[in-house]
Image (cartoon, rainbow, N blue to C red):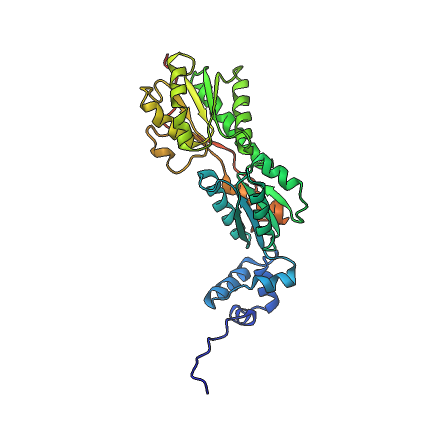
Length: 334
């Protein structure tokens, strides 16, 4: 007889059902996130699965349900705060719905990279596809293809409303402080988020009978904000600018750092408002007034959209955009 000790057979559905005191059919329904299961029953099954260290076999499950319970995610510029938070929110929204995500990254300017990312996630047998930080050219490229799965985009479609609303709130805030000479530091023109935020800022000013006096453009990075500091400072010194809307917090940070070296004081000489409310925004010097949007709510919308189902009974309606007022914006004093 061999001295080799064979590993114990992994727990199966029968063992889970026996421990939970339910049928194997009920266990299967819990695994596949079927509705109309009593919460206490679902909890007993999940606790039994944890106790037995039960592992779901996605391949086997797919054979019986025509679903891998996996959503594909294609992201660009994942080193930036916005896309990183978007991916994390999608992972959480998917988990709440009993799903997984398969992620691929692509350079939006490289058609071959886009093709490769699409091929990678489709090979996982995904049930739907979500784009994070979508560029106009990427959306156009996907529309040209017959993917065979539903497609949604974070911060686009219904999610674009919060971006527009938040930027309008930021503009109205500056107008309410007495500012009339307001500029904007925008992001890359081909990003859908930039389009929504730009339109929202313009709408907020238009309601007050105003328009942007200056507009600069960056690439979302703090460096690009710092690179515009000299031009912004010149406009302030010429009396042409008293406030600026930055399309994200990172560019606002870079701009404020660059302005410090030119003698422009924030908010005394120039009020600055960002967008995103990243975790560091409260610790900028001065603390940054910004806009917070409900990324998790929008992620739940995307998950529900591509799967055609609810996200674990949780609402898919995003909370309204919220203005977070801090020290970088102040009433006009001149």
